[in-house]
Image (cartoon, rainbow, N blue to C red; front, side):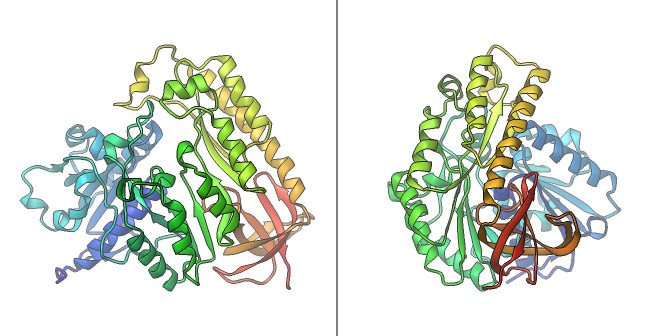
Length: 448
């Protein structure tokens, strides 16, 4: 039985989509316990900030949010902080944020409603144990954004030991959900009107190895594609050595799977990859993907300025980007993360050099994207409409139309397509590409 509770809760989820999905599950637990959600932090009785601390910028953002909410804290209002920052910083947060009423680590997120309701009963203001996460609940989670798309979190934790990363310390060992539970959740999302399922995990393509003895991401995709109302299926966060031939064949042959893959390579120099404790042969993986799935769009992320990165090794990155292997690309400057072993590597790179390397890669990628977009002119693609808006069309005229995406653009992280014509939110339609600006495309609805 839900606890009768009339208090309003404002929930802030920071960081990646995995955190957002986890936050939605936490909100579902709070609602089940009788709380009412609100988007107004100022009027909320309880504020929960679900944090990220994967990289230094994420830690800074989390700390800024906590500081801001604490400054505006009203009498009788309670503030709770949960997630990765709590898991990594632990007791340090007690003195840093005295106005916070309770801190909850990743391994105790399933108790969030109980902790919020009985915070006075806690022996300590901070509850941190073994790392973990709220991978699934029996409750139906609300979809807080991205309609008609929804993320489906297939796993928690990570078994890799990448030198720059502390995810295993924050989230524990790799743990998959069952195919049955994921298909059931996807079917439930479809009933709510979701048309695109985006598969995510710390290492999405390793899905199922821990419980089925082998990679079964392809089987999961096939089962989800049987759901009639699902139109697109997309794979994010693939790991190089778990991108199998079977998966690529599935992407190539399954009409519901977007010809798109997100594979964070981090670098292409074998020497740097070995130093990172990541799989070597990044360029070979790219060649395999392009060969098995003609026309596929590849997104990746790269890290520049890892201690010890030489100009020659950076030149390897430059060549791969310049050669146009990536359709979408994110570049990050290496930053020290407390607890990551990369801090011990000699040969620190200056901030000026890191920024210069990042800027060079992004400028090269912008030129690559411009050439790729020019090839798309006149072609027709299926697109989904997200919201009505005004924009400047291909002939320089300000028009009212729609902001949406084509199948090779993922929500939030890639460019968009702005198009003219009649549409409604969540509708899929044919759009002819008439122009482009930077990373975004311009188009017009084609009535067939």
